[in-house]
Length: 158
Image (cartoon, rainbow, N blue to C red):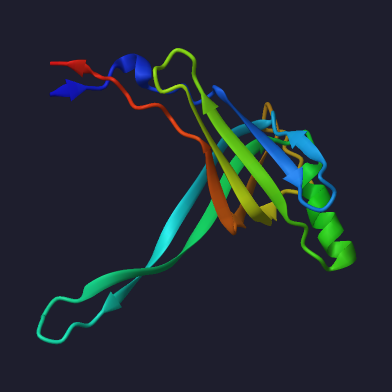
């Protein structure tokens, strides 16, 4: 039996994120992010089966959602909402998220979220009680690609 090496725990701060506007191809390093998470949730339906008391289950689709927190010091996401307000067309974009920690044996994973739409973002904020202003962001994606995969962990023998 093998167990994970402690050195293979990834640092949450080591990584990168990039935003690309699908229409203009303008790309931006999202260095202001402090937290980000993307999830894929399959749509599972119940299947009644004759001759069986338990229902079966079948995957019939899925949904990709993402959310994050960023320092409130850039206008990338408020500009998207402003463009939508003016043109009545929601801009689509691509997000590329990489985890990379050279101190691990697993190294790098890069996920590219495609067909992204913004669901919510802060457009203006003041707070006298905060040391730093932050903003929550969230949205959806229509697909994802796994550009780089983590290497298999070697582990250590017990």
